[in-house]
Image 1 (cartoon, one colour):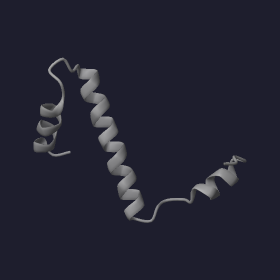
Image 2: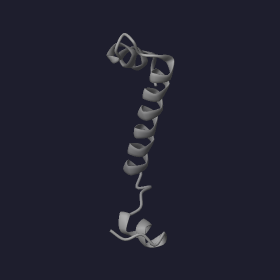
Image 3: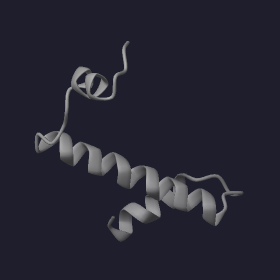
Amino acid sequence: MKKEEAHKLIDLMPPQATWDDLMREIYIREAIERGLADSNAGRTKDVQDVRAKYGLWE
């Protein structure tokens, strides 16, 4: 995360936001960015394959 992006994230938060709120937002953003990077790189699995592996049905 770039410094400018961090400032934007903080500016979007409500005035009563806590450090925990900020850490949660950073964690969520990082998780989304990692997921998008994995998807763009083809490092994903089909939902049906994952469900079959773990014995889950729709």
